[in-house]
Length: 230
View 1 (cartoon, rainbow, N blue to C red):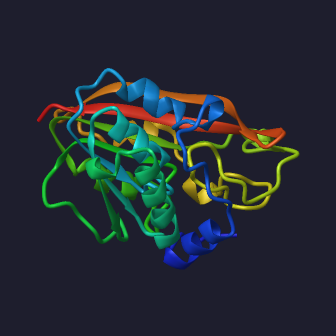
View 2: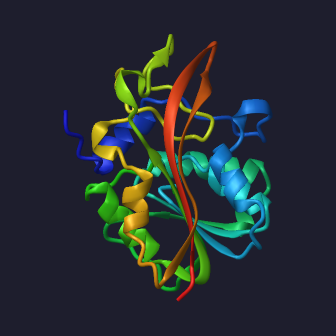
């Protein structure tokens, strides 16, 4: 089934998903591990979390010293994000904006633009090309997307649809997670970036298991990090 990924879709998905922990998590309750690995060595500046969901990665970036703008189409997700940011004491470092990222655009570029599993109404690669244009010269683009790998891609090990991963982005319901419309390959993302303007630092595809209560979910991820050089 083709999904529209519009405001109605995301509102319904978040409203049917449990909220993540408000207090600072421990163990597996932290941000996307790819974000922590790829960004930890960067000098904090202005960051955009494009499709910030319920704010787990947004909060983590603010805790690292970034001045963050979090944009999401779901007001339910943003309301949960606001509670998390306040509980963790980083809300002064964050601006939350309710907007459709296919229409919204920033007034100034950012030192870091990152997006985690955000799926818009436009084609996935077109969305990545759009957000790449919001990176300042010398800044970083970090894209974390979904990859299918055969029949086991996104296979649930006893978990219920609608659970929320540690990163605060909900499942897309049903056994075929993620939706095929959201799939990308690392090479396709890299091909979007002009070699004269970008230096690719990371372009990998990897697999990991994330907890779902007493069970686990196998995810296949695409991670692309690039520095804008001109």
